[in-house]
Picture 1 (spheres, rainbow, N blue to C red):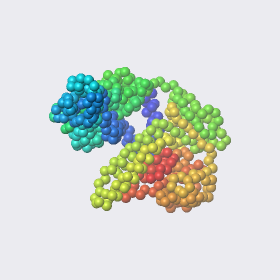
Picture 2: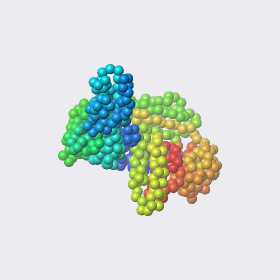
Picture 3: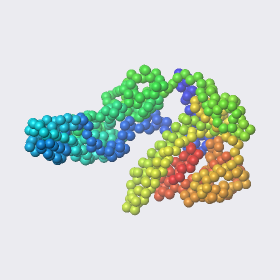
Picture 4: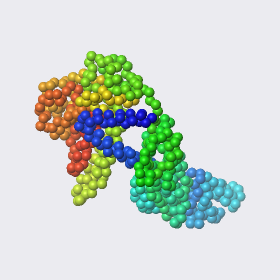
Amino acid sequence: MGKQFAIKQWILGMLVSIGLCSGALALDTQQLSKEQRAVAEGDHLPVFGQSLFKGAFKDQPFRGFNGGYRVTVGDQIALQLWGAYSFNAVLTVDAQGNIFIPEVGPVHVAGVENGSLNEFVLRHVKRVFKSNVQAYANLEASQPVKVFVTGYVESPGLYPGFSSDSVLYYLDSAGGISRESGSFIDIKVLRQGKEVQQVNLYSFLVNGRMPALQLRNGDSIVVGPRQGYISVEGAVQEAGQIEFTGPTTQLGEMLMVAKPDPQANFARITQIIDSQQRASYMPLEEALLTPLYPGAHVELVSDSEISSISVRVNGEIEGPAAYVLPYGATLQDLLDRIRYRDNADPFALQLYRKSVAKKQKIALERSLDALEMEALTRQPATAAENASIKDTATMIQNFITKARNAKPRGQVVLANNARAGEMLLEDGDELVVPLRASTVSVVGEVIFPTSLVFDARNTLEDYIEMAGGFSNNADTDELVILHLDGTINRIKKSKFDNRLKDVLRPGDEIMVMPKIQASELQVTKDVTEILYRIAVGTAAVLSF
């Protein structure tokens, strides 16, 4: 098993070395090396439960009632009497817990379950009116209350609602639990300084259980500090940072939250014990009982004896579209089996890999998170600058929303590497053999994005002109040329009217990037970097 793990590490090393063949991918690879260190700590993982508080509860107050709701002071009850005596009114439960019914007197309804309210009121009416009078009682509205929400929440304060609203409603109204410092398992409801309920949101997240609690005016919801946590990812259904109480926990308890995939059979555990970092790799059955300390990082893997892999081959080939190869097969082993069609271009092979696409997506998400933080935390110096910052922030938020939908292709650059054939293949790899191209595409910020017949005598300026010219939003200072093999060239304006021999080739895409209209230099720089990363990773230009 150790040999198999070493082979996997060697594969990853080969992928990184091959990815360095182009300038843009080198930038991505450097970014990934930083992220791999973060992955080891689990900092990139979401806090389990943080998706709860996005407005879904505060925007939907619960003003209805279930059968178990108990009437309380301030509730309103619609009462109708008919027959020998008629009465119709909405009665408010007074400070003593009573409603007053004419001819009957006070009826103590506080504490009565909603499901039994009608029968309870009718029984008291029958004590006065022995016959020929019927009654119907129904809860009209619960008591409006104001509840303090404090502790480790985003916006502590006093929030209005109804006694029938849940703890989730008030927590969401306070902006939710603080991601960095708040606890999802240590939430207390205090009434006149005494604890009346403890809430563990994991019970709700995993099993849908929420304590049946009616809040009263002046109650306090207190979110405690974040407890110890471990991070779990890999072959699990819900990767994230998971809290626990006590000095240690066991993986078995944490997996009741994270839910392992059926194929998970090994665990890679990294944690600090006695001021020393220790790493272990063990069968899942053994790992379930291993003590885990705060900050531990666990990755579940499906590590079985792989004897073969499957690789798809598309494009200008004769023969099967999928090849089953022995585990450890190289790219050259695959190429030796392929028969090309006459129109194929074997010098522009394209290899796409899911693991590379995943890393590119992580790199993009981290860049977008940093950009969002930069845009939302800038402080204005003047009122005029404040308006400008708001406009820029709105524009950037719209851009980030679109950018998060970008799906990197995960292309591994094979060009300019004489030893590319020695690269080990992964299960699920896709090799594309392109048609020998005769056109050049012009995409992005031009009037008419199109494909044109390649002519070595044409300059970049000629191709842009044939595509209708630059659009108003175009960056006219630089163009990006994306080659079929995944390599790129960035061409400055001074060379637009040159014939780029051996640089511009059939099958290339000339990418015209959007112009960044931001007042802040750092924002412009960050957005430009993200746009280039999306263009290279997805072979598409995202409009800003």
